[in-house]
Structures are given as structure tokens and as C-alpha cells.
Length: 98
Image 1 (cartoon, rainbow, N blue to C red):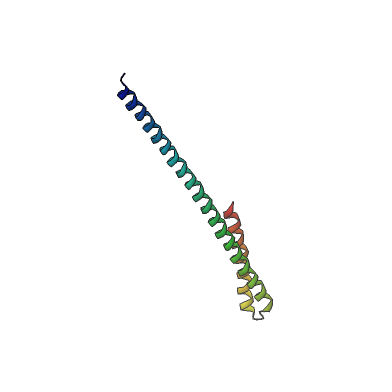
Image 2: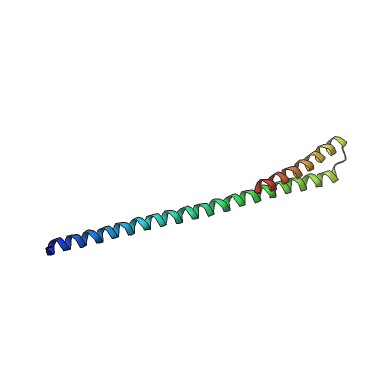
């Protein structure tokens, strides 16, 4: 085997190794990006669920407060419905988390 052929074979082997290394690096970067995206999506979902629970709790608290302040029987019935609806909404959100 001539020197020229040996150099060409060595260059080809090194070029192949560089190509393999680059492909492995791209694959690892893609996996890292996917893992980060999953983490961010999970955090956004948890924050959204926490906001829903907070909103349901606030609505129920306002309805319970109004239940004590209202004297009109028709409005009293409406506030009781609002308190019950808030309790059911909060349960529904908590069960959706699981």
C-alpha cells in the first residue's frame, strides 16, 4: 500500500469519526431539548391548575361571605347555589390533577 493510499484511508476514517461524533452530539442536544420542553410544559400545567384552584376558592369564599350578608330569600338561595357550585368546581379541579 502506497503512502498516498494510507493517508487517504486515514483521512476517510477520521472524517467518518467526526461525522459520527457530530451526529451523536445532535442527537444528545435534541434529547436535552425535549427533556427541557417537557419540564417547562409540566410547570405551566401545574401553574394553570393552581390558578384554577385559587379562582374556585376565591369564588366560593365570596359566595360564602355574600351568604352571610344577604337578607333577601331569593338572593340567599342563589348564593347557596354559588357556594355549592364552587365546592364542586374545586373538587373537579383536584380530581383532574390526579
